[in-house]
Image: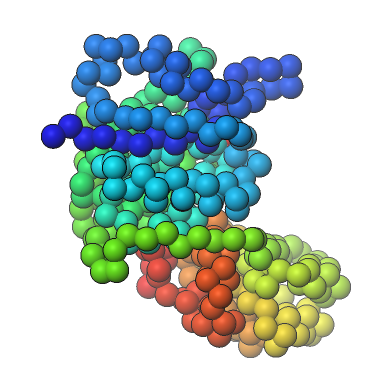
Amino acid sequence: MTKKIYIIYTGGTIGMKPTDSGYAPSGNMQALLDEKLPPHVRQGLPDFDLVEYEELIDSSNIRPQNWKQIATDIADHYEDYDGFVVLHGTDTMAFSSSMMSFMLRNLDKPVIFTGSQIPLCEPRSDGLENFVGALIIATDKRINEVCLYFNGRLMRGNRARKQNAYLFDAFDSPNFPWLGRADINIELNDLLLLKPENKPEFHLECSEDTQVGIVQLFPGITAQWLEAALNQPQKAFIIRTYGTGNGPDDDPALLDALKKATDAGKIIVNLTQCHRGAVHQGSYAAGSALAKAGVTGGLDTTTEAMFCKLHHLLSKGHSTQEIRELVGKSIAGEMTI
Ligand code: ASP
């Protein structure tokens, strides 16, 4: 039987048009695809229905309500389609694909995010290859998770990061192998794919307001600076540290600012500023000091995935203690245990 895919067009470069102030989101994706994929080409591709959101965005404008819209849309159409493709801007695609991996629980169908570096309307666009690749991959029954497909790479959605603003290789999965590659053949790495969990069945867990902040260590950071950041109303913070999770251990006031915040019930998760690698707070005394201040290690989770995981866990109403424990457990394949 012919497979049918549901495509959501949220905006992003793939459908943008030039304006006086640079590329901006533009509608009529269906017409653009009809032009790029004439009937004789379309014949060889899976059937699809495309929904174009009323408010198309540059993904730099992404907000939790956009995530809710995408996740609800997929859940509402879940039974009617074999797979889903989300056309999205590249800037925050790794956040959105991570978020969907936490909101769409127990998937047993593919959800594939893609977009492009050059709009489809331009002669050198990478959009068509990304679109067609994602469409074909979205029919593959072996995939039961949210993925990001870009320039021939299939990556787990909550492992991917935008790594390059210029190359067609815009995304990589620094701490986890690619799930597949599209060359002459599309090859999937079966052993790495998440297996479907039949019980409980697929369901949507909506995430609401953002309650997560991100702070970054820098040479010379002061206790006052950190305190001002941690005094924001957010309940959880990611602290982006050096190397394997190290920070200055010779500044008692700074460590005290962290301790005060964690004692007050704020969740502070340690992630590395390095593109690749994991946090092990015990490797150096400078990392152990953060652990003593109540900071929780986030292992090799990306900042994008941890931001979404914390956001999701807070929305679900878990206690501080439960969240600190769940930070170190893989919920959707987002970390290597
Ligand atoms: N600013 C664009 C966006 O994220 C970039 C892109 O799509 O490549 O929507």
